[in-house]
Amino acid sequence: MKLYTINTGYFKLDGGAMFGVVPKSLWQRTNPADENNLCTWAMRSLLIEQENKIILIDTGIGDKQSENFFKHYYLHGDDTLQKSINSLGFSSDQITDVILTHLHFDHCGGSVTHDKEKNKYELAFKNANFWTSKKHWEWATDPNSREKASFLKENILPIKESGRLNLIENEGKLFENISVFFVSGHTESQTIPVINYNGKKIVFMADLLPSVGHIPLAYVMGYDTRPLITLEEKRQFLDEAANKNYILFLQHDPNYECCTVKQTEKGVRLNQKFNLSDIL
Image 1: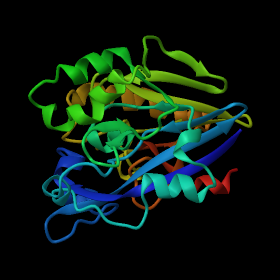
Image 2: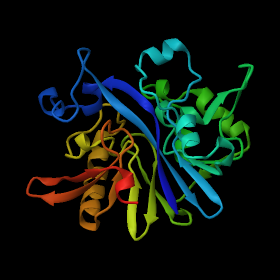
Image 3: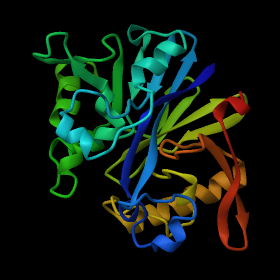
Image 4: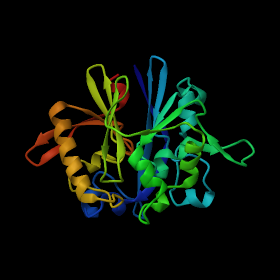
């Protein structure tokens, strides 16, 4: 098995929304805001190569939305999904499977693109099977008013229309060395992949833990639909991660790809932070 970090670019979101009830005087220590109270966030994916499969976890924001849409999120940086994949010597046609942790636009937008004439939508990975939680798919395709703006039809429906959508009903093994579990604080049945790599467990954190700045329990995003459930899911997971020395792969942290956590008198806190390549 080989693992590769896929950088798809950076965007900005309101700092208050990203940290909920936590005061700015506290969260800005790890995530300083600009003059508009916006913080920079990564959109980081993971590529897994093993045996006859090349598996991509999440696909970033994509490039098919309108200029008016993108200007709200201040996209920046030189990286894109396709550029990062190509830089590793792979092509999009080689991707066999895409795991979508959930269907918010910054996690799945790169799954679908325009055709050459920009007349219709097509899959960015035409030979891949797409995997996401069955309960989450149902949630996203009949969205509540609070989340509706994050579930864009053009990011979601073409996957089903392609015939390549696979819905995950149960936690546990998905592929060799890859299992999943579900969490529902951020959104219904978000899929969290766990990779067994050389005796270590690497957990793709998605929006259960966006950054090292979100490790303290109370640091819960205002975007979460059920913040008290997030609180309990974080508590259970971080206790286990600290006790078993899991490696946490951070999708949104602007500076650090991975971290570990440890138990302290104040609860679970950051232990080490590093790049994925440091442990491979």
